[in-house]
Amino acid sequence: MSDITVRPLGEEDWQQYRDTRLTALRESPEAFVAAVDEEEAFDEDLWRLRMKRSARLLAEREESPLGIVSVGRSSNDNPKTSELFGLWVSPEARGSGVASALVRAAAKLAREQGQTQLAYWVGSDNGRAVAFASGFGFRPTADRRPMRVKSEDDEDEVAMVLALGGDRGSVPSDF
Image (cartoon, rainbow, N blue to C red):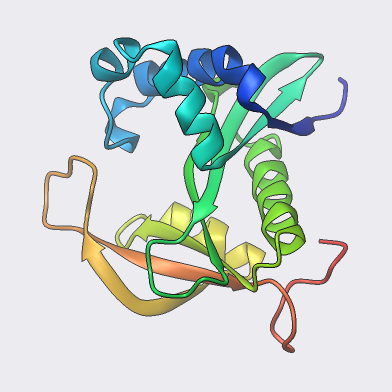
Protein backbone atom coordinates (compact mmCIF):
# COMPACT_ATOMS: atom_id res chain seq x y z
CA MET A 1 0.00 0.00 0.00
CA SER A 2 1.37 3.41 -0.90
CA ASP A 3 1.82 6.36 1.38
CA ILE A 4 -0.75 8.98 2.22
CA THR A 5 0.10 12.40 0.80
CA VAL A 6 -1.45 15.69 1.82
CA ARG A 7 -1.38 18.65 -0.50
CA PRO A 8 -2.83 22.15 -0.39
CA LEU A 9 -5.48 22.96 -2.96
CA GLY A 10 -5.25 26.25 -4.81
CA GLU A 11 -8.05 28.23 -6.41
CA GLU A 12 -7.52 26.29 -9.65
CA ASP A 13 -8.37 23.10 -7.71
CA TRP A 14 -11.88 24.30 -6.88
CA GLN A 15 -13.49 21.39 -8.75
CA GLN A 16 -11.44 18.81 -6.78
CA TYR A 17 -12.45 20.52 -3.52
CA ARG A 18 -16.08 20.70 -4.63
CA ASP A 19 -16.21 17.00 -5.53
CA THR A 20 -14.59 15.89 -2.27
CA ARG A 21 -16.70 18.26 -0.17
CA LEU A 22 -19.93 17.05 -1.78
CA THR A 23 -18.86 13.44 -1.22
CA ALA A 24 -18.27 14.26 2.45
CA LEU A 25 -21.67 15.93 2.78
CA ARG A 26 -23.41 12.94 1.17
CA GLU A 27 -21.55 10.36 3.25
CA SER A 28 -21.64 12.11 6.65
CA PRO A 29 -24.48 14.68 6.59
CA GLU A 30 -24.74 14.63 10.38
CA ALA A 31 -21.15 15.87 10.72
CA PHE A 32 -21.63 19.16 8.88
CA VAL A 33 -23.68 22.31 9.27
CA ALA A 34 -24.08 22.58 5.47
CA ALA A 35 -26.44 20.47 3.37
CA VAL A 36 -25.40 18.76 0.16
CA ASP A 37 -28.35 20.10 -1.86
CA GLU A 38 -27.42 23.69 -0.94
CA GLU A 39 -23.75 23.28 -1.83
CA GLU A 40 -24.50 21.42 -5.08
CA ALA A 41 -26.24 24.60 -6.24
CA PHE A 42 -23.16 26.81 -5.68
CA ASP A 43 -21.67 28.18 -8.88
CA GLU A 44 -17.99 28.17 -9.83
CA ASP A 45 -17.45 31.73 -8.59
CA LEU A 46 -18.59 30.82 -5.08
CA TRP A 47 -16.39 27.71 -5.00
CA ARG A 48 -13.41 29.79 -6.13
CA LEU A 49 -14.18 32.37 -3.41
CA ARG A 50 -14.20 29.59 -0.80
CA MET A 51 -10.77 28.48 -2.01
CA LYS A 52 -9.42 32.00 -1.40
CA ARG A 53 -11.09 32.40 1.99
CA SER A 54 -9.49 29.39 3.72
CA ALA A 55 -6.77 26.87 2.99
CA ARG A 56 -7.99 23.45 1.87
CA LEU A 57 -5.83 20.37 2.37
CA LEU A 58 -6.52 17.13 0.52
CA ALA A 59 -5.25 13.72 1.61
CA GLU A 60 -4.67 11.25 -1.21
CA ARG A 61 -3.25 7.84 -1.94
CA GLU A 62 -2.23 7.26 -5.54
CA GLU A 63 -4.15 10.42 -6.53
CA SER A 64 -7.38 9.08 -5.03
CA PRO A 65 -8.98 11.45 -2.45
CA LEU A 66 -9.12 10.04 1.07
CA GLY A 67 -10.00 13.07 3.18
CA ILE A 68 -10.07 16.81 3.46
CA VAL A 69 -9.72 19.56 6.04
CA SER A 70 -9.87 23.34 6.01
CA VAL A 71 -7.74 25.85 7.89
CA GLY A 72 -8.88 29.44 8.28
CA ARG A 73 -8.67 32.38 10.58
CA SER A 74 -10.35 31.83 13.90
CA SER A 75 -13.52 33.76 14.55
CA ASN A 76 -12.27 34.79 17.96
CA ASP A 77 -10.40 38.00 18.72
CA ASN A 78 -6.95 36.39 18.54
CA PRO A 79 -5.32 37.17 15.18
CA LYS A 80 -2.60 34.56 15.86
CA THR A 81 -5.09 31.67 15.99
CA SER A 82 -6.16 29.58 13.01
CA GLU A 83 -9.11 27.23 13.08
CA LEU A 84 -9.27 23.65 11.85
CA PHE A 85 -12.68 22.76 10.40
CA GLY A 86 -14.49 20.52 7.95
CA LEU A 87 -12.34 17.49 8.76
CA TRP A 88 -13.59 14.43 6.89
CA VAL A 89 -12.08 11.06 6.01
CA SER A 90 -13.69 8.56 3.63
CA PRO A 91 -15.09 5.52 5.46
CA GLU A 92 -12.68 3.09 3.79
CA ALA A 93 -9.68 5.17 4.94
CA ARG A 94 -10.75 5.72 8.54
CA GLY A 95 -8.30 4.35 11.08
CA SER A 96 -5.44 4.37 8.55
CA GLY A 97 -3.74 7.61 9.60
CA VAL A 98 -5.47 9.96 7.16
CA ALA A 99 -7.00 12.20 9.83
CA SER A 100 -3.65 12.39 11.61
CA ALA A 101 -1.86 13.32 8.38
CA LEU A 102 -4.42 16.06 7.71
CA VAL A 103 -4.13 17.52 11.22
CA ARG A 104 -0.31 17.46 11.08
CA ALA A 105 -0.38 19.25 7.71
CA ALA A 106 -2.88 21.80 9.04
CA ALA A 107 -0.72 22.53 12.10
CA LYS A 108 2.36 22.92 9.90
CA LEU A 109 0.52 25.27 7.54
CA ALA A 110 -0.79 27.41 10.41
CA ARG A 111 2.71 27.60 11.92
CA GLU A 112 4.18 28.61 8.51
CA GLN A 113 1.57 31.39 8.35
CA GLY A 114 2.88 32.76 11.65
CA GLN A 115 0.05 31.47 13.80
CA THR A 116 0.73 30.49 17.40
CA GLN A 117 -2.40 28.40 17.99
CA LEU A 118 -4.71 26.07 16.09
CA ALA A 119 -8.28 25.82 17.39
CA TYR A 120 -10.58 22.87 16.77
CA TRP A 121 -14.24 22.83 17.86
CA VAL A 122 -15.31 19.38 19.06
CA GLY A 123 -18.62 18.08 20.38
CA SER A 124 -18.19 17.93 24.15
CA ASP A 125 -19.94 14.54 24.27
CA ASN A 126 -17.92 13.11 21.35
CA GLY A 127 -15.36 11.13 23.32
CA ARG A 128 -13.66 9.77 20.21
CA ALA A 129 -13.09 13.25 18.74
CA VAL A 130 -11.94 14.66 22.09
CA ALA A 131 -9.49 11.75 22.51
CA PHE A 132 -8.21 12.18 18.93
CA ALA A 133 -7.59 15.91 19.43
CA SER A 134 -6.06 15.37 22.89
CA GLY A 135 -3.66 12.84 21.40
CA PHE A 136 -2.24 15.61 19.22
CA GLY A 137 -1.82 17.94 22.17
CA PHE A 138 -5.02 19.95 21.72
CA ARG A 139 -6.24 21.11 25.12
CA PRO A 140 -9.81 22.07 26.02
CA THR A 141 -10.54 25.70 26.75
CA ALA A 142 -13.38 27.37 28.61
CA ASP A 143 -14.89 28.45 25.26
CA ARG A 144 -18.18 26.71 24.53
CA ARG A 145 -20.90 27.21 21.95
CA PRO A 146 -24.11 25.41 21.05
CA MET A 147 -23.58 22.47 18.72
CA ARG A 148 -23.73 23.78 15.16
CA VAL A 149 -24.66 20.45 13.59
CA LYS A 150 -27.91 18.58 14.17
CA SER A 151 -27.91 16.86 17.53
CA GLU A 152 -30.57 14.87 19.36
CA ASP A 153 -29.63 16.45 22.67
CA ASP A 154 -28.42 19.84 23.82
CA GLU A 155 -24.77 18.97 23.30
CA ASP A 156 -22.37 21.84 23.04
CA GLU A 157 -18.98 22.21 21.39
CA VAL A 158 -15.74 22.94 23.19
CA ALA A 159 -12.85 24.81 21.63
CA MET A 160 -9.68 22.76 21.87
CA VAL A 161 -6.43 24.58 21.18
CA LEU A 162 -3.04 23.36 20.03
CA ALA A 163 -0.03 25.58 20.81
CA LEU A 164 2.14 25.85 17.69
CA GLY A 165 5.28 27.44 19.02
CA GLY A 166 6.98 29.59 21.57
CA ASP A 167 6.10 27.79 24.80
CA ARG A 168 6.91 24.51 26.52
CA GLY A 169 3.56 23.00 25.61
CA SER A 170 3.80 23.73 21.92
CA VAL A 171 4.10 21.29 19.07
CA PRO A 172 7.67 20.72 17.84
CA SER A 173 8.45 22.33 14.49
CA ASP A 174 8.96 18.94 12.87
CA PHE A 175 5.48 17.77 13.95
